[in-house]
Amino acid sequence: MGALLCLAIAGAALAQPLEVEDFAGRQVRLAAPAQRIVALAPHLVENLYSAGAGDKLVGVVGHSDYPPEAGAIAQVGSFNAYSVETIASLQPDLILMWGSGNGMRTLAALELLGIPIFVSEPRQLADIGRDIRLLGQLADTDTRARAEADRIDEALSALRAQYGTRGPITVFYEIWNQPLQTVNGEHLISQVIALCGGVNIFGELPTLAPQVSVEAVLARAPEAIIASGRHDMRPQWLDDWRRYPALPAVRDNALFFVDPDLLERPTARVLLGAGTLCRQLDTLR
Image 1 (cartoon, rainbow, N blue to C red):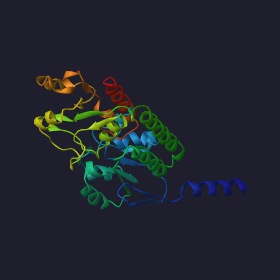
Image 2 (tube, rainbow, N blue to C red):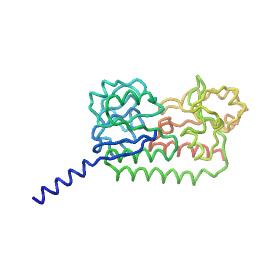
Image 3 (cartoon, rainbow, N blue to C red):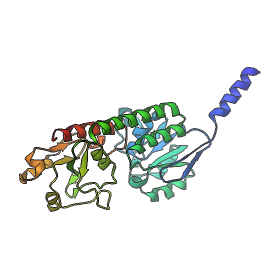
Image 4 (cartoon, rainbow, N blue to C red):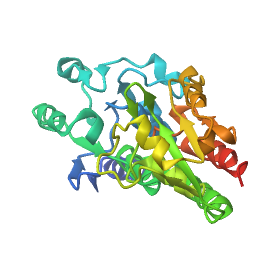
């Protein structure tokens, strides 16, 4: 009888309801820890694995390519063209969505399914750890999630201490060349630049990912240009700047490239991207 009572108590503990506040300030309530999760952004897939709950994923979107095992999970579409019917057919008990990427209209459409939804919107470097911790709470993998989030926070602090106070380097971050696009100071990438002691030359612009002109870049004369591009291949268009030999970044051979997945996804891999960027900028000091 005693053993049965212990099992009953343990079962009740596992089924305890839980509640977290997501990045949209919403209270997300689950009757029990999530067991079947659909993630509508690649960064959420990565962060769920970092939280120790990747095995609970039943649906992802296209380009959810890290870690490699995520490639075997059923896809529900892309981050901006998902199928509500496919999501529903997977019978998830939790949906993870990306506020600005999926669009908040997605929230209203998904709420019709009657499934709890967690909105993720990491804008600060500290938000990466926060995202992982919250996912760990929702999936009942708190210990693993907290340990990984603490590791990320400590590594970012170490990079900031090593590079953040060194001589400032003005930086133009080029997401794409046609149209010429960059990031403002609110973007996570701009925070990585600051972490490395860099200064985003378009940090004051009001749009998160604004389009700019070549003339505006030349006028601000960045000391370094960081290209994004696609995947881990240096884009050929980065060398287009060599047409302007008086530009400090060209003069000092400071046309750099960082794999966009290591900077543009708010995940643990930002540590790799930040480390690369910090070392590149440090060569100019």
